[in-house]
Length: 362
Image (cartoon, rainbow, N blue to C red; front, side):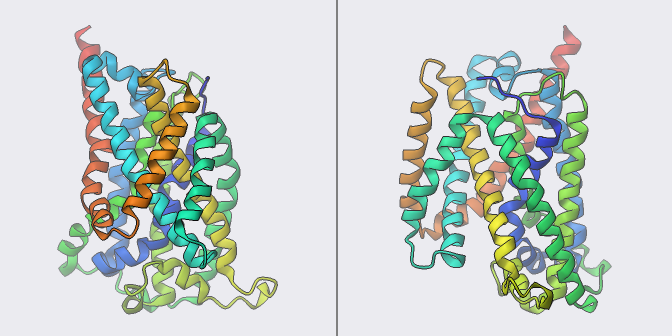
């Protein structure tokens, strides 16, 4: 199966994969940890992950048409390659269970209050798996289609929110006495940028060129700016003291909006949630696709359809096991951050250094 993703599609893959889930709760998380300096904390984190995006795509540019499993063999040997790939499979498996459960929770809270989460999962997981079976090229096209509407609607809603917010709710922008608090809150800002490691499963071609690296870097930085815009506008609407009490702070803020010119839609959040869920759905599917690609590389003689079916069954079983398990959620939002940093930053950096050293030696 030939995999090809355009630079434009890389933009939408990054935006939807990183933001579709995090955007809902980032305002509460940042307000609680960084307060009025949330913008600075997010900006610093965005710059860090912009560098990480460059590292991730630089590997792809050095090994055209290959993904991590392929070129890691040349860099760390067969054993090292399998070890690294297994790490990513385990990491992505944890993320799949967490995100699938979060999707079912959000669907139950906003659209299907009487539907058991197990029912939404048994419908959703086969769809995730089917798209993963079709491959990353097909998925990239879906990202491009949904991504356009997601960005336009998301930004438009936030612009309208700013018009109804209060500027004094986000003042003061900076307090030198709180600099330690801003720096300490970087840990909370990391999670919204995790997912960038899916770049390692995208094989680059000559058509992508070095522009792919620039495209990814600029996109990640822009995502950081979008996070700042969403956080500040939500705080303007709800206020710093109120926002910390809502887990889905963005949805609460949108529902609090009064838009008399949208009488045809009494709840503005319906429009946002519709495309927000579609984007979230694709973000989860991207993780399923990453696991599928890695397993297909490892087990070359196994049929792709069998691998996808096994992934679906195991992920559904895991979701049932960890449903309503606070320890699992605490693990993902705590230890999972460090696992994500290893997957997105540490391992790619090590591989890139090895690639440069081997090139110089040869």
